[in-house]
Amino acid sequence: MPKIDTAKCNRCGACIEECPSLVIAEKEDKTAWVKYPEFCSVCGHCTAICPTGAVAQEELPPGAFMQVGTKPSSDLVRNLLLSRRSTRVFSDRPVPRELIQELITCGTNAGTASNAQSEGFIVVADSKVMVDLSNMVLEAFWNAGLKYMGNSLGRAVVKASYGPELTEQMGQYYSLFKKMRDREIPARSIFRNAPAIIVTHGLRKNPLAMTNAALAMRNMEIMALPMGLGTCWIGFLVVASQRDKKVREFLGLPADRTVCGAITVGFPKREYKKAILRKERSIRWI
Image (cartoon, rainbow, N blue to C red):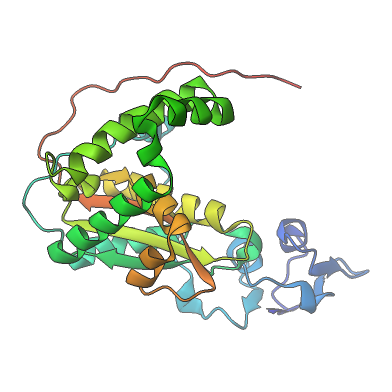
């Protein structure tokens, strides 16, 4: 919980306003005090916002904080975001472990619900493990119902359940996965021959685990760009792990954990010179 040095407190009220759990309150003399310590989620907002260093967090040593540098311009950030593309063609160059560690560090600093920070990461960098994992994902998808897309009755059932757009998408997956199973396409194509995969997992019973993981993965995807790396979200692995426990067991996850996200990581073989803007989406102002 936070501790407040009243001698240093300048009564600005910043820590009181910024505390997301209303842990800190104001005394009659305008100094801050810890009123509800049991509500503290150890987010560190109070310490990070205090201009005089009056607030300290018992669970967060001084080394847990870093000085924030000059913020990049909005044009620079916008250009970075709009230039991001999924990378599916990688060079043979392996990704140094320290670069992957830096990506994960940025991922762990994304927001999590109630500051739970309960997500974990698995890095797959062994080519044989990737092939085995790719084959498992392939079979999990196929046996979960994709194989039925090969006949008119199966397509009619899918269309009635999911609509024409998803039916068309699943039809494409059927063709792709069938070619992989028939070895017309190497099975590792699921991971596009990337040198590494980062898998994020969370608590199975946490309804916001997927959201927490998505935030972490997005941090990693964006940080990869200035590091010269490319990434691609692998939803096949996520869905397959939900359909077949063998995938989770292969990754060494206990029963209370679930795969929430996965991205391939590597050095792109080529660099995209143009950003392709996405179609406009429906916006409703209320």
